[in-house]
Image (tube, rainbow, N blue to C red; front, side, top):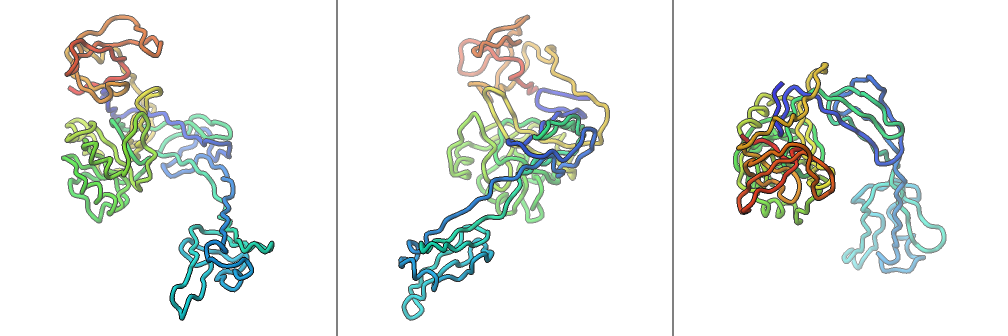
Length: 358
């Protein structure tokens, strides 16, 4: 088993897959699941939408009935006409277009309003990756064990996706539903193409933060990302800036090209550090994950900081004190002193918040 602080080969990943509310668990301990298996589900409250047709049509409530295009308890879809005035000589018509799908309920109280009841829905939690159910979280979900190759990214946007991994610096029509690795430099055009071609995910080395913010149409606010509604997920393996995928990560991605990959772009860089992941599931075995030993770090190593106020900074380890050190959060942890550009003195970094670059 090979491992580094930003990738693991032939390792075990433990996943907790759970609902945010109470529901029903659909799997059993010891069961083998695939990435699209539903672990748990819960019914969501029914959504209803009241539409004031007299206001929308600029008419009296008693006139509404003659303008209706839908009957009571009829199903309406998004974009369909609910009501329409005749206009003048067929022109200047006023239409009320449904913004929701559901069953129409016409008020009988003389108000002229209608109600659209959306179909009941379930909130479902999929497995995310092929694995083994190791324990049940009653009413909420389960814990899984996934035998895999695993890569940690620096930042991610867009949530969870699963698809065939393909390496290509050009995003093509054939990439729809796939996770594309663009190892070279990435531009705004690449992001637009990824959206247009409906890729499932885009794995890149880095991109300038201004370009990404323009594409997202919002400022990037840490410490939490990953819930953006993009239609696809983006994972940065190196950080922000004009950066390409590093050689080690590229090798692992290349070895898994053409295979199913599961990616989770969720990123949290402060308390409860969480980094985006790229997972390549393998056949289940008894392999056990190797934790980072203290000796994985040594003086002179080049490292990247993965959490805290110096997030993504690169520096050189100048000292690794023995024992534990109390940090700002009052936790006692093992630390290293790291020299980074722009600081006269070395900064203190918990070992768990660093990864070895070379």
